[in-house]
Image (cartoon, one colour):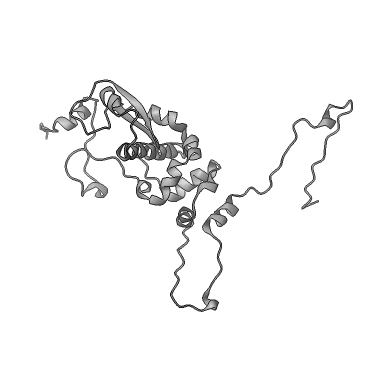
Amino acid sequence: MSGVVLFRPGNELLWLFRQGRVVIESPSEAIQHLPSGLIPEAHQPLTDDDSMQAIFENERVIQRAGGLSGLDAWLERKFECQWPHTDWHARDFTVMRHAPGSIRLCWGCDNQLREQTTERLAGIAMQNLVKWLLERVNIMLGFSEDHILTLPEFCWWMVRNDLADLIPESVASKALSIKPESHSSVMRESDIVPSLPATEILQEKVKKVVSVKVDPESPESFMLRPKRRRWENEKYT
C-alpha cells in the first residue's frame, strides 16, 4: 500500500529540506513532551550549574580547549546575527570579542556594538563560550558533539589536562559523591567526625607517584670515558 504525504513545515523549517534527505521517525519518550516543530539541541545540565561558571571563564581551561581563536572559528560556521534587538541585519558577518568570549554579529550590528561593554553582550558571549567549551570537551573525550556531559566526565577531562587544581570544593564534592555535612544547633563533641576537604582528596588521588627530574646533558657524559650519574631516591635507597 502506497500513498503521498504532504508536509507544511513553515518558513522556519524550509532550510532543513533544502539540505538533502531528512529522517522521519516516531518520537522517543525523552521528546514526547516537546511541541510540534524543530527539536531543540540536547540541553547540557552543566550550563545551569552556578558552581561551574568560574571554571568556564578560567583562562587555563579555555586554552586547553583550544583558546579564544578556536571559539572564533567555531562561531564563523554560524551565519546568523546573535543580536536580536534590531529589525535589520546585514548579509555579511563577523566575530566580535567581548568578555568572557566572542559573539557572532552582522556588519551592521558590529558597527553599532563594537567598543561597547554591557551585561547583555556579556551574557551572549558567555553562552557561546560554555556551549563551545562543552562541545570541545565532548570531542576530546571521544564523545559525539551532542553527548550530554556529566560532572564526573568534565572533571576527568580537567584531570587529564593538568587542571585538577582549578576544581573548587563544591564541584569536587559533587564529583566524588560526598554529601554535605549536616550540623545541628546543639551537638556533642563526640559526634564530630573529622573529614578531609573534597579538593584535598581529589588532589591526593591525582598526585603523581614519583616525580623524576632527568638532566639530559649530564657533565659526566661528555668526558673521554663517559660516566653515567646514578639516580638515587633517598626514600627507598
